Image (cartoon, rainbow, N blue to C red; front, side):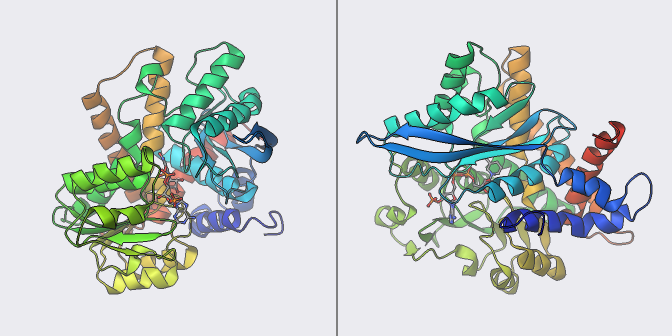
Amino acid sequence: KKRNPGQPEFVQAVQEVAEDIFDFIADKEPYHRWQILRRIAEPDRVVSFRVCWQDDKGDIRVQRGWRVQNNNAIGPYKGGIRFHPSVTEGTLKFLAFEQTFKNALTGLPMGGGKGGSNFNPKGKSDAEVMRFCQSFMTELYRHIGADIDVPAGDIGVGGREIGYMFGQYKRITGEFTGVLTGKGLEYGGSLIRTEATGYGAVYFLQNMLTHVGNSVEGKRAVISGSGNVATHAAEKIVQLGGKVLTLSDSEGFIHDPDGITQEKIDWVKNLKNKKRGRISEYVTEFTGATFHGGGARPWSVPCDVALPCATQNELVGSEAETLVKNGCIAVSEGANMPTDLDGVHVFKKAGILYAPGKAANAGGVAVSGLEMSQNSARIAWKEDELQKLLKDIMMGIHNRCAEYGGKAGSSHIDYVRGANIAGFKKVADAMLAYGVV
Ligand code: NDP
């Protein structure tokens, strides 16, 4: 806390990892507790810069941009860019730290990074978003590269924003390289990248349920968020025979007791991506559904499985207790650190199946890694190959978590512990191989 004042989310993320790896390390060779964790918990560098852009009225606006390059021990820095008014250096440091472990868990050669700005894309015209993205990249370009640091999308950064940023990078450098992932299919993007995080979170859920002889079929799912991750998680739940009851945004949640079908999910995707509307509009389109405003979250709706897919700390201890009390048997995190530390302790104590974001939402960055491979080889893989690779990678992550999160004589897996230790071990071993760096 003293080293990182005013960065509570970063401290929270490091504390959660430390809780699990301290007894694993236990001061025995080759690790020494603080020596190695401190090195991973101190970003290689944090770049902060001014982003100046002109709005439609001609006024000059000034925002702050950052790129946190946390660790490149096992590959180029890799992690998304977030545009949201809540973004601070501490938010991005927590995300880059988490990303380091997540990327290691995928088994692909990617280090951890994250970037973004306190820019709010909501309510801005396309032209304003384009001018902001171009200005952001005009500074960022000097810090990134296909073998150095490869950003992608995150909250507030989807296909439109990646297109504007990639176009600006290409314009400045004259290079066409795989410097960003999440690109359009016309210019080097990979099939299934858009779907990968949400689908992956449900594959992980399915793997956990299979491990205990259960499945997604027939399960009632409560999902938060209504962006990229939430809508694709909903889609995969429906495909596997489950029933989705809720979606949300920062204004509140909708509850549809009849189930949010594929047709309704397509309507939400159009609402969010094209019309840039609010989830409350759902109830004017579909009868039987209710909207709960004032920033309400969906965790009080009885369910079998829960998928938090909006943002950090959106599920606190008391809400975790409500989920458990209502009979929820599994939680798979599509978002990054959506459950606060109290909530994590509730899930662990209750012994339900609980997959932390760094394991469950790694499908997105995994397919980003596959996009990097396709760009380097200048080829495009087919959809069925990529679908299979995504499923295999999620299974691999599940098995790595099981290896380090299992206990002798018990079938219970502590996925948080497993993910933390497996991710840590790979990065720490690489760092130790480099000597004191
Ligand atoms: P989107 O911008 O597409 O959607 C974000 C959703 O979360 C929106 O519904 C948004 O509502 C809601 N939300 C954002 N901030 C808040 C808040 N403070 N309180 C309540 N609701 C909020 O982002 P993504 O779907 O891409 O990302 C969602 C989560 O998944 C994030 O934690 C992200 O880091 C994580 N993630 C994303 C990956 C990806 O591939 N996209 C990969 C791995 C993790 P509103 O419109 O009102 O802001």
